[in-house]
Length: 132
Image (cartoon, rainbow, N blue to C red; front, side, top):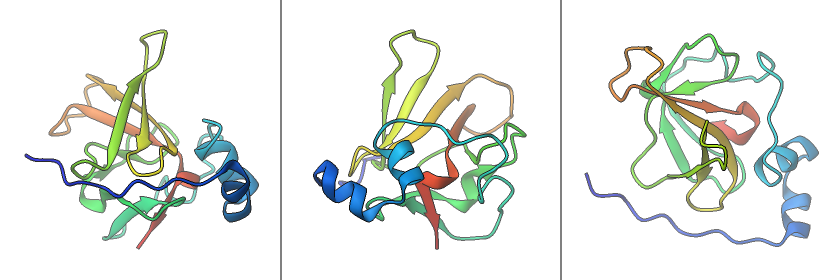
């Protein structure tokens, strides 16, 4: 499947600080992690689209969300071209970021046995996404 192009969003650190809450800035721009089982989308299963809270780029369809029990929203597949992957230096995890604004979303894990079509779990911080 061809990847859809996304529009690149660039902002200065000062602008990001002005448009994001302190917690959103810590996670999206400084690669933080919210505490498990505290995010509003962990147990949220309505039909719609999850987008990057920083730049509004659509990232995930709700039909790809599943209950992994890990304490963060879990998806098995992002929208084509919406998510970049970068292996962590230690090789244990792969970071996922918004392809448009490079905002930190979380990490992707493979082969955990959840039985998803991709055999992946995108472990996403709730504060990194919005729902519509």
